[in-house]
Length: 235
Picture 1 (cartoon, rainbow, N blue to C red):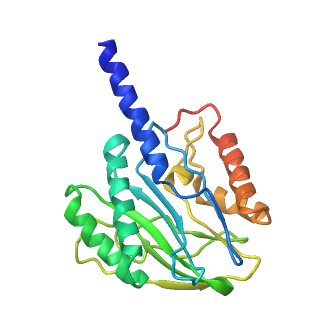
Picture 2: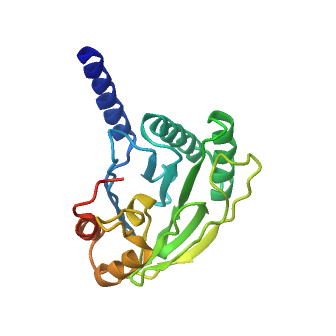
Picture 3: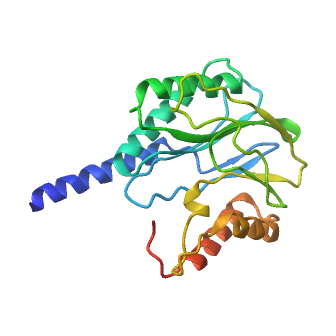
């Protein structure tokens, strides 16, 4: 009845506020890095995961992550919160990136449903453009300004096999270069003619806009995406 509908909507609104509280500071700046993100669920909550944080070890490193939990809605958002808690706890320990991802995989396997999994790309950005990165089945990050794929998947998504092995890659970015991480909500967005936005359009867009600051680049990308999907229902 109407009371149940209102109560359900209140629960969804609360879940949305809780999930918003798990997200990091939207913009980050340090001596060497500028970072920004946009998080937009289709419904009240989402299974996408985003992280930006600096540890209290005085190194000035930046930890970054983008992930995508299988499924939709409240169930996916609960698993997103679980992944957030797992990674936050591991980041407080003195572990290598490989150890962080492999332990996160084992813990996610132990705590999630057998059918659940999560793609994840994460890494450390240090001084002088040095980046350590690991890609567990996620969309390949793109290097700015040329829009080329940086690191394809180096391991399976988290939650599939507890014994999963994950390889860490290293990048060296020049002062005029950057890195774009995204979920398939961007590349798989479809137009009214049922055409995907796609990796090709994204790379072409980046080559023409990579001179922008991180917040301005995101705003421009959202405008380009809106032009593509105009008139189509959100999926």
